[in-house]
Image (cartoon, rainbow, N blue to C red; front, side):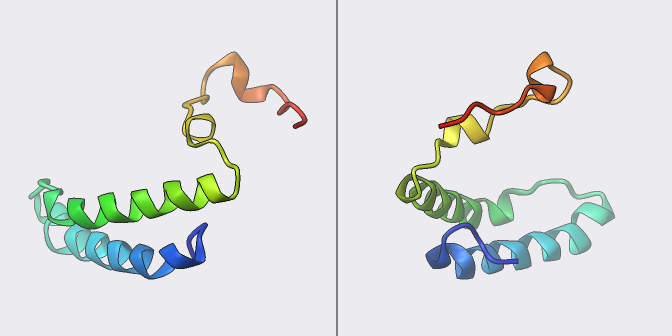
Length: 79
């Protein structure tokens, strides 16, 4: 799956590869320190935030945790 921004797709693939390797080679063997992929995640997150800004998407709005709240079933407001 591609990233939200075309420029971020390669970064997403690098992070996904790192995460999948960490998950299989470390996490499933009881080693839960996930810092190995943290630098890649930060770079990818920054790219995604920039792409969202370019597309006029509000990062704070899309990152809200709404599950289990009254807002979960509320219809989105028209822009």
